[in-house]
Length: 184
Image 1 (cartoon, rainbow, N blue to C red):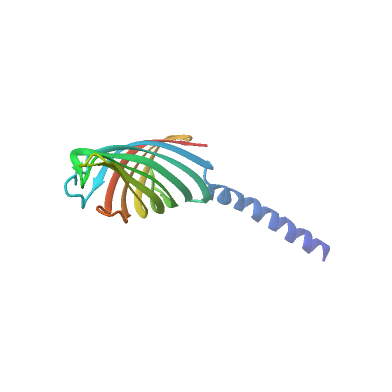
Image 2 (cartoon, rainbow, N blue to C red):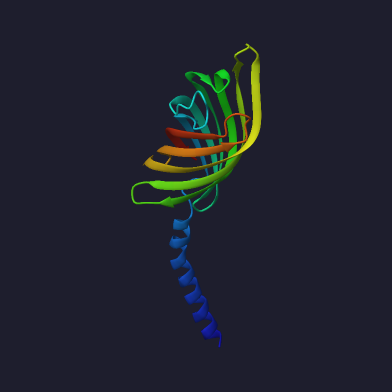
Protein backbone atom coordinates (compact mmCIF):
# COMPACT_ATOMS: atom_id res chain seq x y z
CA UNK A 1 0.00 0.00 0.00
CA UNK A 2 2.76 2.43 0.96
CA UNK A 3 4.68 1.33 -2.11
CA UNK A 4 1.68 2.28 -4.33
CA UNK A 5 1.50 5.75 -2.75
CA UNK A 6 5.21 6.31 -3.37
CA UNK A 7 4.85 5.19 -6.97
CA UNK A 8 1.82 7.46 -7.44
CA UNK A 9 3.72 10.35 -5.83
CA UNK A 10 6.71 9.83 -8.13
CA UNK A 11 4.50 9.64 -11.21
CA UNK A 12 2.73 12.87 -10.21
CA UNK A 13 6.10 14.55 -9.62
CA UNK A 14 7.42 13.44 -13.03
CA UNK A 15 4.18 14.50 -14.74
CA UNK A 16 4.32 17.88 -12.99
CA UNK A 17 7.93 18.43 -14.05
CA UNK A 18 7.00 17.60 -17.64
CA UNK A 19 4.27 20.24 -17.54
CA UNK A 20 6.54 23.01 -16.22
CA UNK A 21 8.00 23.98 -19.63
CA UNK A 22 4.49 24.24 -21.10
CA UNK A 23 3.35 26.50 -18.26
CA UNK A 24 6.48 28.65 -18.55
CA UNK A 25 5.99 28.96 -22.32
CA UNK A 26 2.48 30.33 -21.82
CA UNK A 27 3.82 33.27 -19.80
CA UNK A 28 4.99 36.55 -21.37
CA UNK A 29 8.71 37.28 -21.35
CA UNK A 30 8.04 40.71 -19.82
CA UNK A 31 5.57 42.44 -17.48
CA UNK A 32 5.58 46.06 -18.68
CA UNK A 33 5.93 47.85 -22.01
CA UNK A 34 6.58 51.50 -22.84
CA UNK A 35 6.05 52.64 -26.43
CA UNK A 36 6.87 55.94 -28.14
CA UNK A 37 5.19 56.64 -31.49
CA UNK A 38 4.88 59.20 -34.25
CA UNK A 39 1.81 59.15 -36.42
CA UNK A 40 -0.70 60.64 -38.80
CA UNK A 41 -4.47 60.95 -38.67
CA UNK A 42 -7.51 63.13 -38.82
CA UNK A 43 -11.28 63.15 -39.01
CA UNK A 44 -13.50 61.72 -41.73
CA UNK A 45 -16.37 64.08 -41.08
CA UNK A 46 -14.64 67.45 -40.61
CA UNK A 47 -15.76 70.06 -43.13
CA UNK A 48 -13.34 71.65 -43.89
CA UNK A 49 -10.29 69.78 -42.61
CA UNK A 50 -10.97 66.15 -43.44
CA UNK A 51 -7.29 65.44 -44.20
CA UNK A 52 -5.88 62.26 -42.67
CA UNK A 53 -2.26 63.47 -42.97
CA UNK A 54 -2.11 65.55 -39.79
CA UNK A 55 0.86 64.66 -37.58
CA UNK A 56 0.96 63.65 -33.95
CA UNK A 57 2.58 61.55 -31.27
CA UNK A 58 1.49 58.86 -28.83
CA UNK A 59 2.91 57.18 -25.72
CA UNK A 60 1.75 53.71 -24.64
CA UNK A 61 2.11 52.28 -21.13
CA UNK A 62 1.19 48.61 -20.92
CA UNK A 63 1.02 45.93 -18.23
CA UNK A 64 0.54 42.22 -18.88
CA UNK A 65 -2.57 41.01 -17.04
CA UNK A 66 -2.75 37.47 -18.46
CA UNK A 67 -0.75 35.66 -21.13
CA UNK A 68 -1.39 37.50 -24.43
CA UNK A 69 -3.63 40.03 -22.66
CA UNK A 70 -2.46 43.56 -21.87
CA UNK A 71 -4.01 46.57 -20.19
CA UNK A 72 -2.79 49.60 -22.17
CA UNK A 73 -2.93 53.32 -21.44
CA UNK A 74 -2.51 55.35 -24.65
CA UNK A 75 -2.04 59.08 -24.49
CA UNK A 76 -1.21 61.46 -27.27
CA UNK A 77 -1.84 64.55 -29.33
CA UNK A 78 -2.80 65.06 -32.96
CA UNK A 79 -2.27 68.49 -34.55
CA UNK A 80 -5.21 69.05 -36.89
CA UNK A 81 -3.59 71.89 -38.82
CA UNK A 82 -2.93 70.27 -42.20
CA UNK A 83 -5.75 72.41 -43.65
CA UNK A 84 -6.26 76.06 -42.70
CA UNK A 85 -9.41 75.20 -40.75
CA UNK A 86 -10.60 72.09 -38.95
CA UNK A 87 -14.36 72.52 -38.90
CA UNK A 88 -14.84 75.93 -37.37
CA UNK A 89 -11.43 75.92 -35.64
CA UNK A 90 -8.02 77.18 -36.69
CA UNK A 91 -4.82 75.58 -35.24
CA UNK A 92 -6.89 72.72 -33.83
CA UNK A 93 -5.37 69.99 -31.67
CA UNK A 94 -6.83 66.73 -30.40
CA UNK A 95 -5.48 65.45 -27.07
CA UNK A 96 -6.51 62.08 -25.71
CA UNK A 97 -5.95 59.39 -23.10
CA UNK A 98 -7.52 55.95 -23.52
CA UNK A 99 -7.37 52.76 -21.48
CA UNK A 100 -8.40 49.33 -22.62
CA UNK A 101 -7.63 45.70 -23.18
CA UNK A 102 -5.37 44.48 -25.95
CA UNK A 103 -5.43 40.85 -27.01
CA UNK A 104 -2.35 39.51 -28.81
CA UNK A 105 -1.52 36.54 -31.01
CA UNK A 106 2.03 35.38 -31.75
CA UNK A 107 2.93 34.64 -35.36
CA UNK A 108 6.24 33.23 -36.58
CA UNK A 109 7.98 36.59 -37.13
CA UNK A 110 5.72 39.12 -35.43
CA UNK A 111 2.97 39.58 -32.86
CA UNK A 112 -0.42 41.01 -33.79
CA UNK A 113 -3.12 42.42 -31.56
CA UNK A 114 -6.55 43.95 -31.41
CA UNK A 115 -7.81 46.38 -28.78
CA UNK A 116 -10.88 48.20 -27.53
CA UNK A 117 -10.52 51.21 -25.23
CA UNK A 118 -12.52 53.96 -23.54
CA UNK A 119 -11.03 57.41 -23.32
CA UNK A 120 -11.22 61.08 -22.68
CA UNK A 121 -10.70 63.47 -25.61
CA UNK A 122 -10.18 67.23 -25.87
CA UNK A 123 -10.42 69.24 -29.09
CA UNK A 124 -9.11 72.78 -28.84
CA UNK A 125 -8.37 75.58 -31.25
CA UNK A 126 -9.22 79.15 -32.18
CA UNK A 127 -12.60 80.24 -33.58
CA UNK A 128 -12.76 82.58 -36.59
CA UNK A 129 -13.65 85.37 -34.13
CA UNK A 130 -10.29 84.87 -32.39
CA UNK A 131 -11.75 83.28 -29.24
CA UNK A 132 -10.26 80.07 -27.90
CA UNK A 133 -12.60 77.09 -28.08
CA UNK A 134 -12.48 73.74 -26.28
CA UNK A 135 -14.70 70.67 -26.54
CA UNK A 136 -14.20 67.74 -24.15
CA UNK A 137 -15.94 64.37 -24.39
CA UNK A 138 -15.71 60.65 -23.73
CA UNK A 139 -15.04 58.32 -26.62
CA UNK A 140 -14.43 54.79 -27.79
CA UNK A 141 -11.48 53.52 -29.81
CA UNK A 142 -10.75 50.24 -31.57
CA UNK A 143 -7.53 49.29 -33.26
CA UNK A 144 -5.11 46.69 -34.51
CA UNK A 145 -1.42 46.43 -33.70
CA UNK A 146 1.58 44.60 -35.07
CA UNK A 147 4.95 44.27 -33.41
CA UNK A 148 8.19 43.09 -34.98
CA UNK A 149 10.60 42.05 -32.21
CA UNK A 150 14.19 43.24 -32.60
CA UNK A 151 15.54 42.01 -29.27
CA UNK A 152 13.84 40.41 -26.29
CA UNK A 153 13.39 43.87 -24.75
CA UNK A 154 12.91 45.96 -27.95
CA UNK A 155 10.48 45.97 -30.84
CA UNK A 156 9.02 48.08 -33.63
CA UNK A 157 5.26 48.44 -33.42
CA UNK A 158 2.63 49.84 -35.76
CA UNK A 159 -1.01 50.46 -34.97
CA UNK A 160 -4.09 51.66 -36.80
CA UNK A 161 -7.05 52.94 -34.80
CA UNK A 162 -10.51 54.37 -35.24
CA UNK A 163 -12.13 56.66 -32.68
CA UNK A 164 -15.72 57.67 -32.07
CA UNK A 165 -15.99 60.85 -29.98
CA UNK A 166 -19.18 62.77 -29.24
CA UNK A 167 -17.89 66.24 -30.15
CA UNK A 168 -20.24 68.98 -31.38
CA UNK A 169 -18.87 69.06 -34.94
CA UNK A 170 -16.71 65.98 -35.65
CA UNK A 171 -17.20 62.46 -34.35
CA UNK A 172 -15.08 60.00 -36.40
CA UNK A 173 -11.28 60.02 -36.29
CA UNK A 174 -8.60 57.65 -37.61
CA UNK A 175 -4.92 57.39 -36.71
CA UNK A 176 -1.89 55.40 -37.75
CA UNK A 177 1.17 55.25 -35.49
CA UNK A 178 4.63 53.74 -35.81
CA UNK A 179 7.28 53.60 -33.11
CA UNK A 180 9.50 51.62 -30.79
CA UNK A 181 8.46 49.63 -27.72
CA UNK A 182 10.61 48.71 -24.74
CA UNK A 183 9.72 45.63 -22.67
CA UNK A 184 10.61 45.28 -18.97
